[in-house]
Length: 110
Image 1 (cartoon, one colour):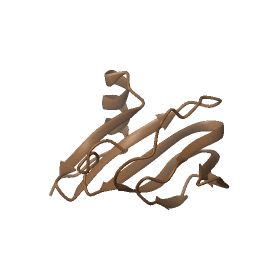
Image 2 (cartoon, rainbow, N blue to C red):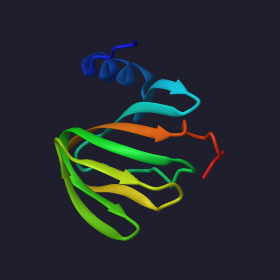
Image 3 (cartoon, rainbow, N blue to C red):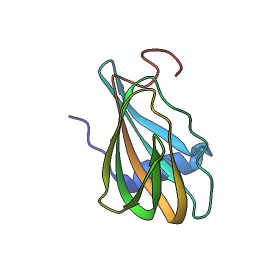
Image 4 (cartoon, helix red, strand yellow):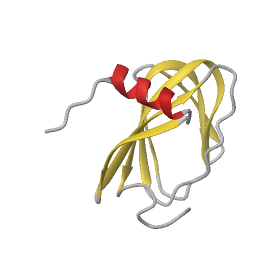
């Protein structure tokens, strides 16, 4: 079993200089940590795989297929493949665990 500590994942993401840091990749699943600073814009585009988001910290909203929902620590949301979505109105830095099934880009770019 591999075990991960959020603090270590966040440190690795920070060292990468990227918003997203992948920490698991197998054929059926990939997972990463995604951090969006307060008042920032979410640049992501729809993905070719299903996604599950878990908000570990922060507060804002997500718009999925034009429908807006608030998110905060403890929020869990599913976004089907190819559906337009992004985080908006980020009031407090969002720390989000992202799970793709199958692994991100298995079906190619969105």
